Length: 427
Image (tube, rainbow, N blue to C red; front, side, top):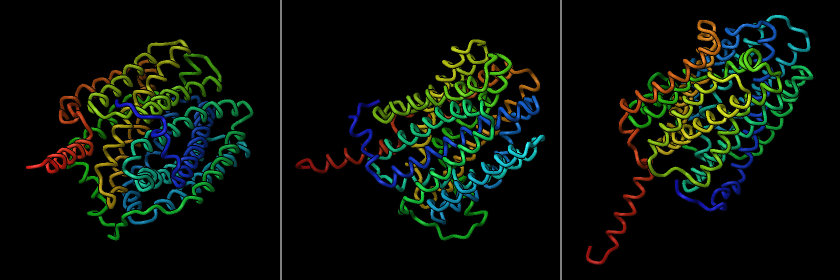
């Protein structure tokens, strides 16, 4: 990593649009993380079923998978800022419904899953718009820092959200849902204070050809395909965080506050790593850094499965988050820098499909394998599968594993070299 000065690391915050966007994203993510702790704990207390914990992820992923490619086309055709605002309002509606169900003393879980379907639909449209709009808000020279700071702020919310959710849950799930709704209101207000960022608008109607353009683009670029698919399969099998409510209750024997700390630990690791990346961005041996981060993720999952100690579990989850952050950072820069703005929403949608599959579908896979093999064996299986995927992808995508510089950095260096040669006398 190359050294950067502190002023360069935070100078992007002078951008008004980016600062408001960042604050809105932090508050919205904080609300969602608080809700996720309450939902997992509430569902597990109601049913005691590991399979139902997996269904929480599936309920969000199913509509996400159906809608995400159309959402990418929408992000290229319509104002991305307005899409984000509408999605935040939908998330606010979901939180309000969860609050209403809880206050009414609901005794079954299917209405919660129905709300999660609506939440997954909003998330489908929000993810490509959120990823694509960041590229429009900041200049090229600040984008790497914007990615790192945005990821850092996101993981700060991931750190604080579960802790607050776990502590507030002591007063009851309705307290969590009420606080989350208030944060979402603030998030909507902040996002409305931003101004529309310039974007290349796609005027083509939604057809199979235009909707699938992002998928064709990714498929034609082995480096991008390898980076996105590595994250998909590694996190798909290593998604042990879905089992944390059961792991906290049955293995570590801690309460909801302890669960909040466990949910926080990956965010702490990811946030600290992303702050380092803001000041010391990866510029050389990019492929090695990415595969190394995924390998650390897998090893940390194995340690989590082997341990029955609360401090060791926290340390393993911390390393899990840090390793995942390195992979996320590399993948995001590859996707955003190498994609033309007119199809950035659709390519971001493809990226979001892989992220969603690795997260929500990974949660379902974890719940399913836990139901089959038991809690500890399911976590160990996930860690081993992640390491196996890492090894396979090193050989399957050698152009990615051996990549030294980001393609856009390599191109910039070549252009500088060519310009220097032309400037020499007698050249």
